[in-house]
Length: 215
Image (cartoon, rainbow, N blue to C red; front, side, top):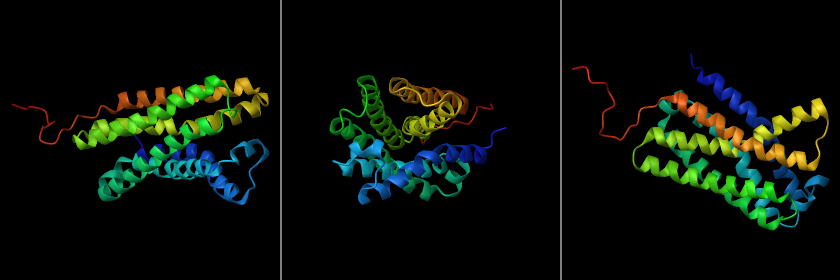
């Protein structure tokens, strides 16, 4: 039996660590109190601030948008928050891509290439989710937004996985850390695809009826 409330709670729990880090960054960036390992972001604070601000809002709002009961009971709120998420997701992706250019020494080439692919994929998923709504394909819209969520919340999976590794085995090397971070995005996307295949949502195109023929 599906329990949307439990799923929403677990998604919020997954988002808690990156959301708290992002909220802390919103204080540290304008006050110049970034930790030592993040000081390389200091010369160009605007993109870092936008990335943190929209990341925190996306992490906290998106699980509520995925709750089917809330969608049904508050459709207007769902639509308005949906546009907030689209704007936030777009800002997350673009600011992340800008940071790749502004901070070229912040990661190894394989990790930068992965971030380039992920940022581009987020923009593509958001575009396809909007196109699905325009064509009244609600099922397609949900699927593309779920993929968007999976990619953006790679940060949540990274935080949990790295914490477990540090607790069990100690701090990994920089090269190993890059591999761990990079693998979390395809892992999230694979989980999202499994969830999508479990939805079995009917394709709704407005006038077309999805009711079974009982004649």
